[in-house]
Image (cartoon, rainbow, N blue to C red; front, side, top):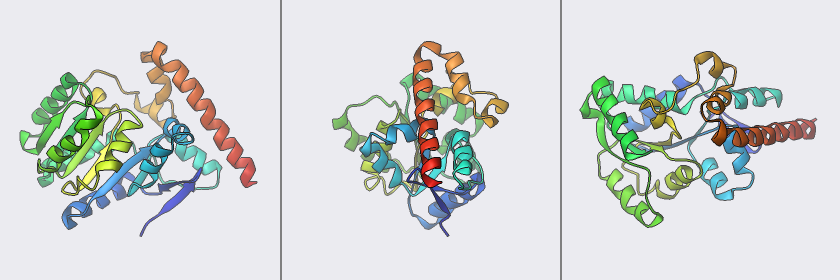
Length: 247
């Protein structure tokens, strides 16, 4: 049964990490496909003006709340989400299950050095048997269809795409029919950089308090401060406006 809430007109699945994993495993067992995406405050702000991004998100089969701010804001608006389902945590759990259950993964995104390191780490941690293929995330529009075909032909059960928004969302929504051989497709943002050790992830306590954005700003102040200041302010205004509209 589908359990969804409507948050700022976006259908978000009100399911836990465990329920998400169960749905993915069922799709693989049934040889179906799940197109998965996550939303956070920044992406929801972008969706207000980027209609192609909005379409690519709302047409996904599962939409999880990646940011703790989404869980809190939904609660303020009278909606209930059981927990945050972080994209990087979901990917890590699915890679582990790939080793346990014989699935294969394709990794698309980041620089070639980063994706090479990511694959090395997973080979050391698990086995090279889980690797269906990998490549960097730098390609032209006219290369996309061929890349989708290569992924489809790779024998992968799962595809993880680490490219910035809105490119990854639009790529997955555009080519999911060509990727029908792949049972689970998801965008994972900057996750490859974190796992490869290029970028540090915020401590658990900062994640629980919804302060991962601050940790990113501390690491890259020149690049991130304006993005988060503007993005977070716009998100708060959207929630406040919806709160008074509902009242």
